[in-house]
Image (cartoon, rainbow, N blue to C red):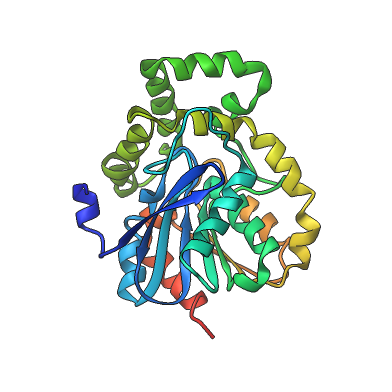
Length: 298
């Protein structure tokens, strides 16, 4: 357990099989439909460390998970990672922990897993919370340079070169974080330095690292966008409530992207906060207040 873990409420650890791999999950006890926290890339469950204490203090059951290939989850040699595999990871956690109804909470690249789980299992989904996610083609969607590089097939040799050199990949991450934080408030920049930067660095420096999962997932980015664009008709028919909590100062996923996504939903509400790409860090108390108000069991 790290010093950061010591500041979290008490939790139970689980290692859950999914396909040929293993998910890592932490179950923070409580009642009501469980908030199931889904990270994006290139980070892991620790992006929710500032949010979890607020949810648990309100008595709500909260489960945080690392998708296969990231954080403390399994990273076997030769593993294949994909967006459909992440939906299966969510299904495996729900089954293993006997979660009757859940509220998937997604950030960034976790968005497709949360939305597609809800489309597949509306009876098991009390609601969905989305924070600065992508899904299908959307007005206002700008792709970070790091993701553009790894998702563009003609540049695959260059992407592999960066991954093969820890020093050069670290330079690339530093370049991207500088752009992500360009308009961030001082407090947000400080929390990035103390929480986000180190957890992303550990994701790639630890062995085995998250590099393979990151490379495979980003390579499928544009295909996933196209596949989900084809599902927008299903999303428009879905009766599950969606709550969009958006950092309005995100330099890539603008609020216009959130407005476009909300317009595809039968039951969608949008809350724009003075925060950057990680509202659960920049405005944890506000995010928790909105989640708890929207996620109270009937």
